Amino acid sequence: MAEQKATNITWHEGNVTREERAKGLGQKGGTLWMTGLSASGKSTIAVALEQVLLQRGKHAYRLDGDNIRMGLNKNLGFTAEDRAENIRRIGEVAKLFADAGMIAVTSFISPYRKDRDAVRALHDAAKIPFIEVHIDIPVEEAEKRDPKGLYKKARAAVAAGKGMGFTGVDDPYEAPEKAELAIRTDKVSIADAVLQLIDLLEKHGLLKA
Amino acid sequence: MAEQKATNITWHEGNVTREERAKGLGQKGGTLWMTGLSASGKSTIAVALEQVLLQRGKHAYRLDGDNIRMGLNKNLGFTAEDRAENIRRIGEVAKLFADAGMIAVTSFISPYRKDRDAVRALHDAAKIPFIEVHIDIPVEEAEKRDPKGLYKKARAAVAAGKGMGFTGVDDPYEAPEKAELAIRTDKVSIADAVLQLIDLLEKHGLLKA
Image (cartoon, rainbow over all chains, first blue to last red; front, side, top):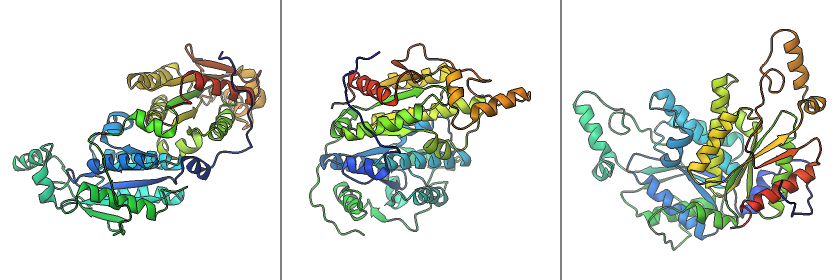
């Protein structure tokens, strides 16, 4: 048994509220949901945004392929059903972070409007801010970048008559119709994109308690 | 488009680290995993602990039935497979919160040693603190409390030859063999339990940056 060092303790009946948690963090919780084609710049922008928020004493957490596909969603594949479940779970986890008072920043292609709208509805029902941002780039531009060679691979698969259900090549990307912001990443710098997102978070009241 | 208010922005290549996030929060991230019978006091202790941590300027988030079963895990039932997946997902989400720098406090019966050990292994592999606490009470005492009438219901089901796989009645509770702490909640007050947990978090270095 641990030796008891703390010597006084008081609490009231009932849970700590979302507002109290967020106040303790000096901000308001919410989800910033970035959607866009592969190679549009979602992850790069998310990484830069997280740094800038931390510099300003704000508390964000990025949900991305690295910490989701290898962990929580490692038992999901790429069937239509699994893709929907992938986004559903990410949406639920983002909502938990936002409920905790954090700014959840997601960077997934999340190509289907229906899936994104379901995540928005989850947040709306709980009165938690959901801010959808279209990281927008023409597919030709994304394909020129192709840092991981995925477009090339997808085109080759299609040419060989196989296909791989790759967004923008042989699977649709359904652009948001009611996104809070669209950023044309073939036209603005990463720095500008981050500035726009900081302004957006301010506008939605997330950066003060 | 939002009007740009922020006017300067710098970032370095690479992600914000776990250490930087936690430092910004004035603490270290980790998972405090409470396990124990229904009516042992897990949720009551978690609620009180969260309040005391907040009073001390620390940042915790409780994962419990209320925010998990209705959301992330609403597509899971009570088969053996679903119970394991339930705990796996909770473990992954707790790990994400801990990675974000938060103190994740879970309060689930989590009766099977194998499932809890898998969550511990997840954390160990990522070098994230995992602190297992047995909220320990003899089943007879828990059954006397029975605030939700669940034990009564389970006994009646067993008597009727049906059974409901209720932990401590007709499904086993596998007590931890290597828990960091055990608290006998039939012998100590909630205040004492919380003091012990605060001391434990201090001992593991989670309450300072």
